[in-house]
Image 1 (cartoon, protein in one colour):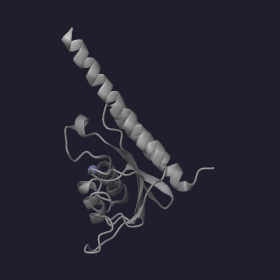
Image 2: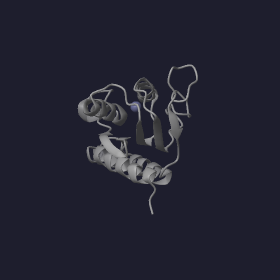
Image 3: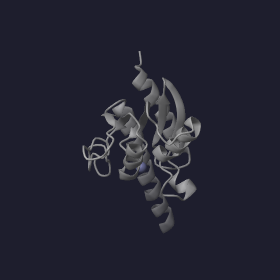
Image 4: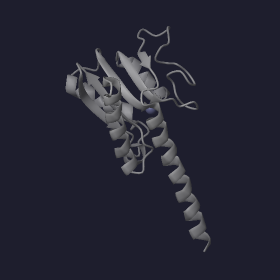
Length: 162
Ligand SMILES: [Zn+2]
């Protein structure tokens, strides 16, 4: 049996696969309110040629449109990878209740790795953080993507020499 947290993380993984289909780094998320998914997002940075097109920001924009409010009080985000500084900042600004994370990002994450913007005392809002939901599946998806990317680059290089 899957827990609710795992069920929603599965949907975030489904979103990440959409990014992967566009040859984007597979990162996906969903925003849940009242037990229902109200918004989905995936990384489209290269496709949109826009540094703001992270999965989390795409989903926040949709959730606000749906709720007719910039405040996401009472909502929870499920995201496959620990948010960066930009997205963690936006999550604090959105007053979201909770962020549930799949795998951590030691070199760029701002929910406890490089920084912990979500639970910082000094701000006027703190976001509850839950880590490690379907962690194995989330991190495997990323490592498989980067492995395939390296192999593709290697192959290109080899073909270029001939
Ligand atoms: Zn981000």
